[in-house]
Amino acid sequence: MYIRKNLRWRVIWKFAWQGLVVFTLYSVLVCILYRLVGLRSVSIPWQPVATLGIAVSFYIGFKNNGSYDRFWEGRQLWGSIVNYSRTWAIQSLEYVTSVVDAPGVDAPAASRAELTLRHRRLVYRQIAWCNALRLNLRRQNDQWDEQVAPFLDPAESAEMRRKQNPPAHLLRQQAADLRILREERGLLNDFQHVNMMTSIEQFNNLQGGCERIKNTPFPRQYAFYSFIFVWLFAALLPLGLIGEFEKMGPDHIWLTVPFSVLVSWVFNTIEIVGHTSENPFENEMNDVPMTAICRTIEIDLREMLGETHLPPKLAPIDDILY
Image (cartoon, rainbow, N blue to C red; front, side, top):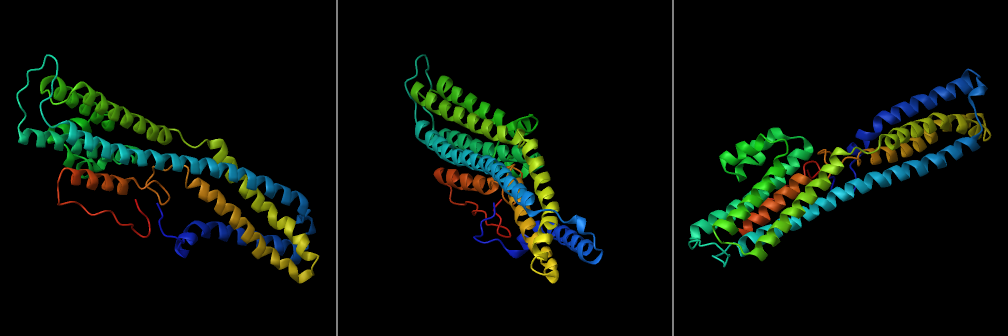
């Protein structure tokens, strides 16, 4: 996610230079054909070009609204992941504290070392789930050893890595641990168990929401025709402008070049903005900063465990927070 208030010129140029080159060469060619070659037939009335421009602006505006909605929904989902991760840590620490009255359970008192181990396992697995979900969405499962494995037991990490959907199985393992805490260890009562299972249900819903965005591409008919319409308008624009500038005098014909390039660049930039917002989980410049969010979750949850040696928050790289 780009966080600088104003875009740097190199960022603008990165997305603009190809279009500017094409628009400039094409406009110059139209002027040469019209003025130097004398091919007056390239000029067309301005009114239909203007009408097309209005239609294209409405179309790409509609498409961009849909693209932004996808980004914003992705950001809301990850905001909820942050909130429920904190809730999970609080539940793990405050519910799993001592032996509770559980029908049919005759469990020995849990030692402080056992409680600490169970707290750490539940909280660390949640951190692992966040990172595993991020890697799964970005198709970066090759980073498992660095991003997920440190938060799991080696055997569990190896088992989860072999799964088709590791985040889903991590949640299932959380549920299995809760069952053990309730039925075998007597460390959760029914109310606490239901509350924590509700949190797992929320994590499943949030994961499903992210996967729905990831696995459902932005409708190609909107994206493709938006691109076609913008370039069709850019192709007709100098043909409509050249006759209008000629009315101001023969030498004014060359004003077609800067004005058509400027208007075409504006329309093309709007189309590019929508295109770069279509898929918010691709680890690109304008995507949801899942890596930074995962680091924030890690810091918050490990601090709740009482740890003091915490990793720093991620800083933006070239004004981009990943």
